Image 1: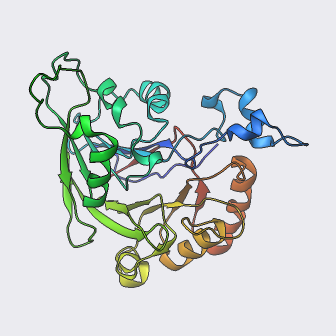
Image 2: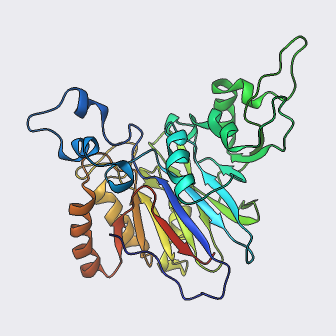
Length: 319
């Protein structure tokens, strides 16, 4: 169904990227298309009623990427980017399918609902302890996200119980502040990661991330405009060509104040000139098969392989 990113490093430790979610905040199918169907009904959303999600590339959970990082033969570290509203469903569907045993570290792009509202369920992928006597999972986020999550999830941020407060089992997290700056990389589970600040609406900075020394990857899930330094950092014209770009695209036509839509996404890919690109964050306007047919023609014309990603997609890669 899809062309995977192959590499010629068969003798090297095999890492992989697993797309846990490729949809917008409201996910796909859109609930309104099912409870108040149009005439004719939405083809993409109604497909969910007849085709199981694991065989339906138009079934999309909130955007999330799992980096299966293998620094040496037989060693695997699992780095999770974003923990949205659909996280539990993604665990049940794709952790089991791809045999993912745990999460070793978490990175947050920002603090909107589709990136953080699954944080309570992190306890489900941590060792069981009724008194929370376990090693906390490192979680990397900027200061704005930290300030917001102290309000959204005070019980996950709280360090010590207050006098008389009962112990309740909750996710154990080790909060680590990162900068909105490409010059301030950090290390998560042994993998060096560079923050890529971008605009997500003109009043809001969101983070993408770049990683990989052997294959250079950039993941940008929520963007309305590139900040110049970030664009230069991942652009072929400055000698920084990406092996793989994973980029936001919300609607098929027009524009949006807080996200790239299809026309802006394709223009950005033409400017950046990555070796390959996958698109994420799609609404129900996108039909996986039909729009990938269009992208096959576009890719031949522009010389850059581009396609829509889908939930559950696994890409082997040498990081």
